[in-house]
Length: 278
Image (cartoon, rainbow, N blue to C red; front, side, top):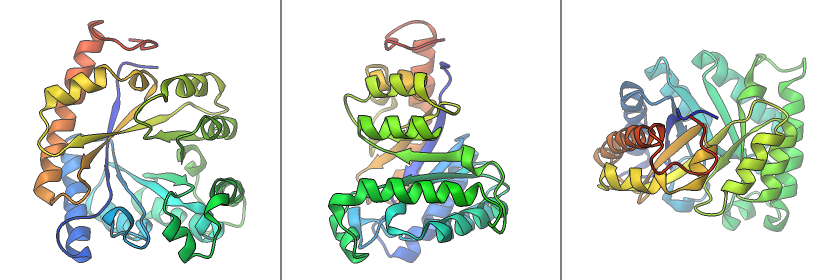
């Protein structure tokens, strides 16, 4: 591990206006994140307006963002892959990866909304097994010879969003990155992941920042969070979800400042979580 955290921004693509306005504002937000020095920008997939999100098709919006940006990596956090055709996901991801200059970070998960699962005629109680099966098929397609266009390196930029010890271990076994939003208790599982991953360990830790919260308060919370010691990327997301563009822009600045303060304190040895290595 390193005391240097990459910084990403995660949005649920909601807002106070129309979906069209939310898409436009999300593109502007991604441009601002790139200008502010963020390493990655992530969008959540929602069906049926779950969590008041407007985006069922993340690859489409990320393609527009790819044309408006030049450096920042573009992530899905996450595609509910058990509700999708794995070949369709692979093809859409491959096109986006080619279009963006291999900037896609492909995050998948089981999905948490029973209403969305019902829309696709699936059994919500089986979503974790369905996700694992679809993920394995997706990996086979991405690594095969029938995918057009091919997506070199995309398998090394795949992430599994999970809040369970079993899910973390499954991601380690497959050599995938882990996206964790667990507010408490994640550190032991993430520590074990670093020692067991079949690939290069990657942990994206998602943390909420309240709209208007001072950077010093965010930094203090991060310093006290033992899971931060095992993160390679910190994903900032604004709370509440339905925040306007101005609110997101304020959180962008707050997140960058908070991570700088956190790194400075940890580098000096102050309030360093267990397991942190400078």
